[in-house]
Length: 253
Image (cartoon, rainbow, N blue to C red; front, side):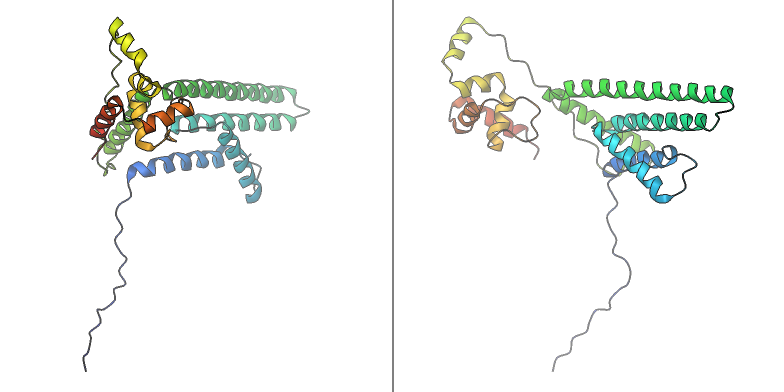
C-alpha cells in the first residue's frame, strides 16, 4: 500500500503582477471627471442620494453626447456641464430673493457669467475635436501623435515614480512622398492596372489591405472602391509583392 503526502495548502494570497500604469491612466481621468461632477453638479440643498446620482448620471450622458475621445476632450466636456450647473444654481439663488432685487441681480449676473463660460468651453471643445479629426485623417500624423502621447505619459509617470512599464517603441518613420515623375514614369504608370496604380500612390495602404485581406477596421483613410480592394488582394504583380516584403520587414517582431 502506497501513501501519498499532501502538500500543505497556504492561505497566503497569490501575488499578482503590478498593474500597468499606462492602463490605469484613462481610468484615473474618468474617475476624476466623475468626482468633479459629484462635487459641483448637484446643488448644495440636494441631499437625497438617489437624486444626486440622477443629476450626475444626466451630466455623464451630456458629456458622452459630446463624443470625447481623450483626456483633454473629456475634461473640457466636463467643464461645460459643470459651468452650466453653476449657472442654474445662481438662477435658483436669485429666485429665492424676490424682495431683495440687488442681490438677485448679482445672482443673475453670475449666472450669465457661468453660461458664457459653458458656451466658451463648448466652442473650445468643438475646435479641439476639429483639429484632432483633421490630424487623424493623415495616417503618419496619427501614428506620430499616438507615439507622442505615449511618450509624454511615460515621462510624467516616471516623474511621479510610477512608470514601471517599458518605454514606448521608437517613433514611426514618416512615409516618404512619392518621387517626382517624368514622362517615362507617366507612360509606365498609365500601363499599370488599377491595383498597381493604387499601390504606387499609396504603398502603405495597399500593403495593409493585402495583409488584412480587406480594408482594416482601424483604417483612418478613405477606402478604395470594392473592385480595387479585390484587385489588390488578388494581384500577383511584382509591384505588389515588393510592397508586401517591405511592409513585412517593417512589422514588429
